[in-house]
Length: 478
Image (cartoon, rainbow, N blue to C red; front, top):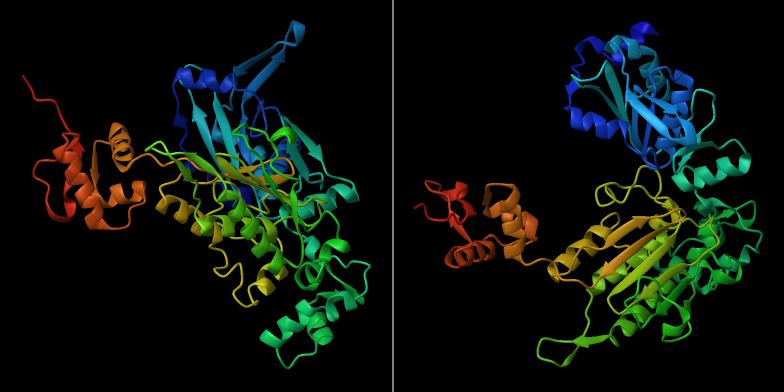
């Protein structure tokens, strides 16, 4: 094991990162929470693996080993920096990482040194993983606030599998007559369009949408004419309209009884988008000229976010998708957390389909709602930017994902460029286009020239051609 360890973790080549006393003090005073924990260097590797597993199975986090903690009177805690004498002393703790992550990915580590305090603190950064990660005792753990909880019952393990997308509820057979989807007009129309020579029952079985003579969840939501009758509270969309800008909607400001949109997914998504657009068109606000103006959201954004909420939701959770229209925003709530290693930060770059069959087969329908598979959210963000509106906000909560589409303008191009120049000394046309979401180089060139004429910025002397650079206008020297 030592030879393997030295191969995976060449400790002799690890250089400790030096931090100042102020940073070290902040580290020792850090509150343990959902994404952070401190341990003394005496913690056993097996105990350490509980936290590593919990971070990996939940939201990831930062673990600092080498911080002692004493409980004083009145439950007051006192911490102190007391690190490893050298990097080799952390060998056993790093072996816990090697056992937990045999492929050597989904984590990073470094050693921290402060001249004012003894020893090295081991900083381990664990990412949220696609697979379920088990601790050295064979149990997977999850993180809740500042505690790690073992998932050792069959129900807990099953729920963790659904949450991480290891197992999808879409494959679950439902005790309903298979004729519900075999004789459905949705199936007949689909088969005529996609596989005209196939028999519905044989084709559905081949696609694993009928298992042990029962339709699966995916089969029902895709091809049943009314899947909500068989799967109540698991596959509907509710649309609300609140006449308020408050953080939370309430009954007194509801414009109407919430509309429940039902039917197969193909029809349901289109109906939900239509209803949402119709209600948004009723929204008015005072314009610059003193008259009421319509509030406009990019239809592509609404379509893509509602589609995403429906096809990637966790169907094991008995709840509908909720679309809430407020005076200044739209909220789309989808049951279930983000699957696998997908997080709100990387969701535009990472791809993982919890419901692979639903995504794949829905894309085969004529004019499918998920036409550009894997690019829906990117399109939603791009259209908001093209309309001069802020990016949607994606929030992952305990048992759902909430996407908020704000009707708030982006900062002007000038404001964005000046804010950039507050942090960086110079800017080029290409970088200005990146941060303002302007695609045309000539359009950006004209904007930069106007800023020069207004005395906001000036060309950097001796730059030209492709390297032409701007900086903030400097005050003339006395």
